[in-house]
Image (tube, rainbow, N blue to C red; front, side):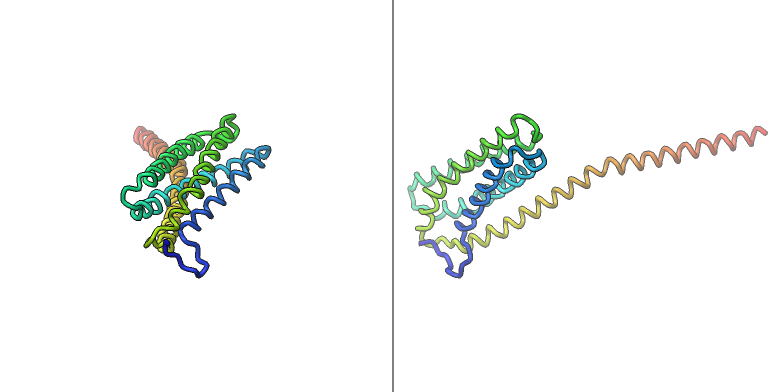
Length: 205
């Protein structure tokens, strides 16, 4: 069986199952909140999209490659399953990108999110039913070390997201700073022109 410690620390599959539960709750919260204000819906959608994207990155960069490396030679069925899972991630990414273009009051906003939820829930069902049980049987796969790698990568991704948000706020403030600088330059030029006119007037006298 795959290596896992018994100290209560979650292994790689445990971490992914936690992600699945968080996403399922967010999808349920969205269904229950569709009569709420746009801000509430937007916050739920943004959180769910972020969770989906981070989950997909962890699987594609770490979990799937580790599983592939421990598949038996000629296990085309499992290789095909992982290939299809990555294609499903691409479809989910497209839906997330579309949602990021829409406003919460757009009539298609809820439709896109509900389709995203169905895609993800189907992906979750297949992983939990067909993939995870097989991964647990794999010899020499250290799920505990894989979990640690995934935790570190998750922290990096959250840091990148936060840094991007701060950078976005800074960029949005930059045009105002440029405008203020331009106005200051314009005032200085006007002052210099007025001074020149005074000097010319004095010279004529």
